[in-house]
Picture 1 (cartoon, rainbow, N blue to C red):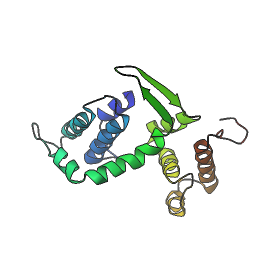
Picture 2: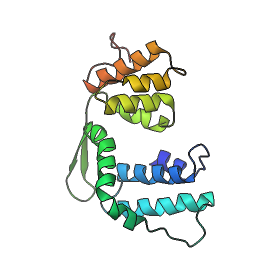
Picture 3: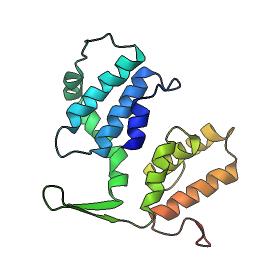
Amino acid sequence: MNGLMRLTNQRVAELGPLVHAAVVSFAFVFIHPFMDGNGRLSRYLIHHCLGQSGRLPPQFLLPISVAMKKHEADYLRALTTFSKPARQLCQVTWGGDEHYTYEWAPEADTWFRCMDLRGSDLANLIVTIFQNGGTLSNNRRKRYAERVQDHVLDAIEEAVSRAMQGQPLSEDGED
């Protein structure tokens, strides 16, 4: 939540105000910090980010709920596609009120350590490989070829694949 709050309250010029607002809102829903009200707060965050950027006039409200309802299946599919792999890393048992237990999968921290780096090539590669079942498509390899050497792409792909299988990130066990 601390990282999300920093992202929420800073202007991210390279993202642009609309993308910034969407990322903040989506991330808040993904984190889902409360038992109730997460959706309403995520929509507030869209207005907050756009207002702070100057792109939304004061006291102006966008019909975000209407748009989300109209495209609800697409929204839920995007949310599930992103969150399902991460949710498999942790079993949460709710015992009522504020009583929770968490059981983490081995190497689960690898996924969450990369969440702070989402704008970087490394984070994008890790998420892409993770969502593609442990491999990097030839299309993505070509896209990163100018910035990332082939043997580095291979190493990232191998580390993500090993983490997904619950193995140490490197063959020698030194992570």
